Image 1 (cartoon, rainbow, N blue to C red):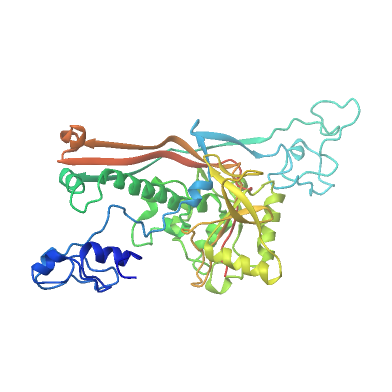
Image 2 (image 1 turned 90 degrees about the horizontal axis):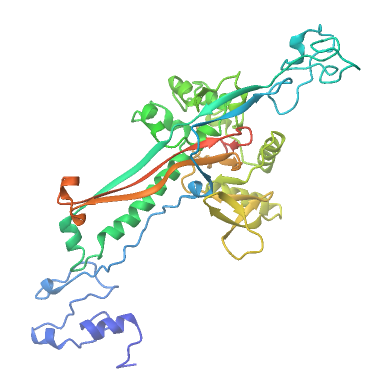
Length: 449
């Protein structure tokens, strides 16, 4: 209806003159010999108008900066955070007898000659696991009573310093406050750089093992360990790393880097140190032909293996593509993934019962499925889907020595000499490192289609 403002286009035409709607109301520009407005309608031409009004045209951008980037940091959010109270921890590496496997090993032959070493061996006799005769003599293998002791070991971590620096000049700060600026440029940069600081830490946690290889375009073998230890390095095994470095099987990492990837918390993964091995399912190998289809059997087998090993997975990290494949598998069989309400907190993922807070996520066997956009895919098959990490966050945490802090100095603080420029410099800094107290409770499924 004429004379009424019903749309944004009507409002612009009423304010600025002729627009896409054809209104003619700017008398000042009419007097100048033109009937075009100084503000082109949003659905008009992208180029500036030509002619007498070219210098009057002004693109209005607004103060709000809209992010068109996905900067989620789900892996960082779900990991439990603890104060960095010590540089290492002691662990029970082996039972007093019966090995270090998931079960007490009593498979030794019953006719083995009796001796003291038999009682503390990795494999025990079924009739010599603690039963003794009445009034048994001490230190007598005949009576079944010999001194034995478990084996302990130590692991240690060094805090990692994660920092991101940025700067802005005095002139840019002043110009941003006038014309069509964004106002307080420092507030905008603090927000965007803070998100980048968190996003970078998230990427460190899901850093693929292939990036540890010096055969990449840049030498990551030394510098990559400046960041947090990747979950992929923690949730791994000697068998997987050997297969990754196998020229005929995987060749995804350089064989010279094999030992460096094996190195973890001051120890070297080896066949003799089994407690550092997580539960890893990669199939028969890492060649392109050995990638396998993701099935419910593969997932259920991993959950069973973790529970047999004494673990209790609290969360499954995976990518959106794998989550979609899992959804298709379940719905094709007229099953439905349950929904659970969770809250990512400073102490990691925890369930919420009877409270209308948090957000709802899919679950599998009551284990929350958290999609991570940066989740990688391990394998030589180009059509492979992202991996699945099964994490027991009771035994996996981020040790925080100093939480994220923001520092800024410069001309705005009256100290240009401190930064050496006519402007400001700022940075975010976090100090910490990943820790794990039970590797067999962590699992990973890779090399899947």
